[in-house]
Length: 373
Image 1 (cartoon, one colour):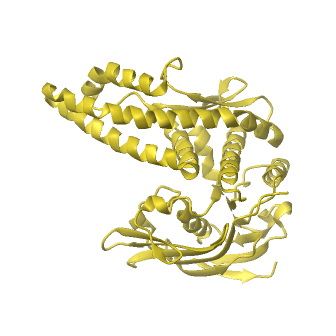
Image 2: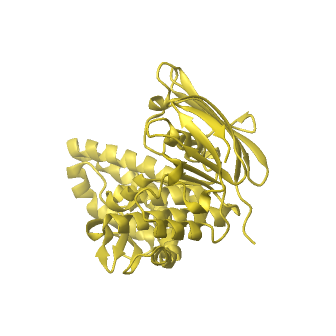
Image 3: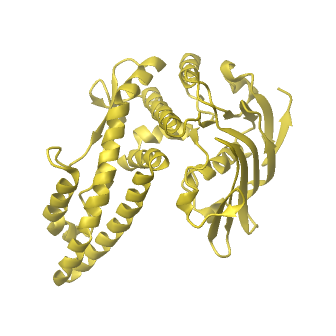
């Protein structure tokens, strides 16, 4: 028996990107949204996913998400998870303030609302998870783990704060040698939180590496795709001890260069195809398969943590895949029960056969109109 699913029952947006006013009721199975490029399909998915990660999935600043000529945006979602809940977020350009709410109550901390809508977004841009710089893959790991582990989220917040402070101290020590003690003062906190990040990342990769290979093979890729965690820290030492020693050893170099060169912020999720670097040697199709596999692992991690099939936000993810691979991906997604699915495509003919039963809506110039399926 499959897990129950997250059900986004209603979505309302005001002045988010080009979406002046959207009020949309959604069936439990989901919706196929059809519209030409530039009319707001991806913007709607971005607005929905904003309630999961509390920022733009495309890396935009909050002030750049506000519709031109207006003072702020607001997003409100009615969601059924283990109960019925109302999620809301608003941003005001005047004070550059963001407020989040849960069931009508304002939350004092952003982290209290983080992960409030268990969901995964698939997009053609995901190929950057494979073809992009290591920072893309680190952000992927940070997102998956922060959404499913409060311990990881707190460690990540502490690590980033300590890293900023140590880097600032490094720059000062580069100008005034007597201030090296200020650099050392931040190293225990950096090693403590960094060790937590390192351990949870390595454990997640170890737990999911075989499944990553299986998914890529099931989609139809030839050659074995593998996932490992690459780090400069020695594996024969306890992580906190190893990071402490690395920070001390690197301190003179770090002072000269004004930045910290050791720690999980320098690690990478290493992906290979038949023992060759997938980033350098993989074809576009092989890289896209690997990216989809990573998103599927993200969905599985969310499902394991919350006991619900997460909402699937599909931003025309099969645009550059053949029908055979698309069908296999959808079969894999549905093997444990398909979650509510919101698919956006430019043409009705782009809806995969497996999702033809979804209700339909059209979007034009930021306005959504329901149509008969």
